[in-house]
Image 1 (cartoon, rainbow, N blue to C red):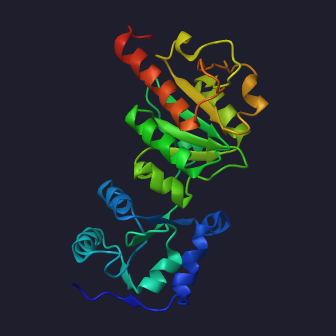
Image 2: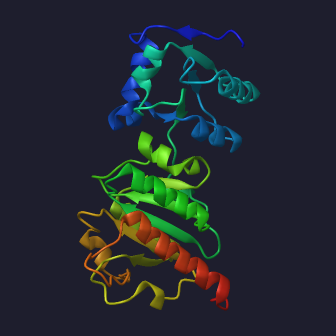
Length: 275
């Protein structure tokens, strides 16, 4: 095992600064976040993501073989690596059962106008998402369905760089184009891009599968408790609904995203081109 800088105390200034990144305010102020988990870090490195620092726990949290693999990947991109005592590592860990690897990273996301879209783009907009796990699941589904981008908007929801979003996204955050903006900014951007805006409302009279989804489309999903704001009910938006035949009146937001995205994928693969 190579000799690496070692941090013993949880009160080490570097450790205390990293621990603050568990809060959104500190992430915004520093422009950095924590990425926790061997799998997430490995996928990001393999995708070309540039971390700033890597922190490794001792055994048994991090087996020697896993540590060696991460050190090798880090050496390939000149990523500084620090060894920590278990107490120091747990000070910065977000998970109850950490697996021994945490990286400091620039925040994910680009400005809206920097998003590069295809000819007939498929975009997912999420307004004020409540649960980081749901947002992470939407990112994974968007990638699986071949979406061009995911955009988070609003001012009261989970931010893209929350540690549990990173975890639930399983690395998707580091290779799927993502952005954050206000609802007004996103509406303006969609109009300028000439995308068909399809917000999901339980009471919308138009079923999602009755709409032509082969050209540029943006699905818009809201928080499960509050739903979408009324800004999405006005033209040019076309509200759509997913039929609910049981007693519940809505689906989990990540499930709704999967239904909508895979209907778009089905139409684009099985129906004649819309162009």
